[in-house]
Image 1 (cartoon, rainbow, N blue to C red):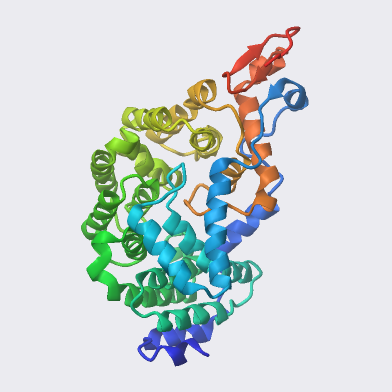
Image 2 (image 1 turned 120 degrees about the vertical axis):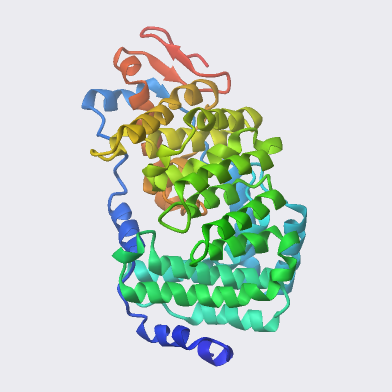
Length: 443
């Protein structure tokens, strides 16, 4: 059944845009393709031959190929995908309602409701992205099937969110992350059409947003791609963060959407980061400030001009002090070593940007010394591929090797002088130990 046939209220612009689907693939697709072609490389300058030769013998860094956080995330997300594939929508909906109401999350604060929702729409999203990467026109079969499910459950907000977020994800797949004036007109029209449909869906559930974090998160995701006042967007995020203060994802997406390239301003971003820190202090201490700026700084280095650097670094420490998990330790270490690598700073960047990135990069020293004792390759892989989103974990098979390579090279660079002197650098649960030449690493 055709999308226009099952949705009598579908706008004419939306229907018309779908007649031009063979539009050029967006910049996002070209960027991902470039990353795939560059899969064997790591960030920064290549290691010297002498340093590279010492890594295997002198750098002891255990690898957790199945970390608890990744396993937990994958299990919940895969279950959402399984229920959707089995057409067990009532069961999936009941589960989402339950975990959304109780704010159930993984040990490292990833919302179960978000994971189930993503799993349920993952097949549709991946099919669209794969088609765009191959330069083909995506099929509408998947999104049409989801729309049919929504028609069978018109009052169920869990189903509505799955379908609305599918439209939002597809819209972003067409648009990419670039400035609007740099994108093909057809891509922007498709982006707007999908967002228009998502708005129609979510608009039916405005009356229950105040008690459903997943629904309010979907509304914030929608608003991030719409034309509206920055104050209205900030207010929506403030309500979401107050509703689910233990979830760092709204903090990260808020920082992203309050950048000037979308609907915000640097000063507003800094103000809202402080407000968010106050709302989440019980869970994160000053960490709310770090979460709010984490992706914003990666996407737009100009955000450094309003950043309180000491407050940001204290936020990193608070997160690791309160939640000393290896997932967070790897996340912070990869962010410092790869995302904030001074080698990635633009040659003409102003001093404030250079100094900010350098200071964050230097935090790698205390993260490695006090918190990290095992490598989580998938975290490093995501940092190595892109710093522009907080999307779900990349596909394991395609990124495991890249993550290991990126992490070991980054750590080797940090301890280059020690390794070249013959010192063995050993990480373990007992802490970081340096064994000079001639002394065996016994732990």
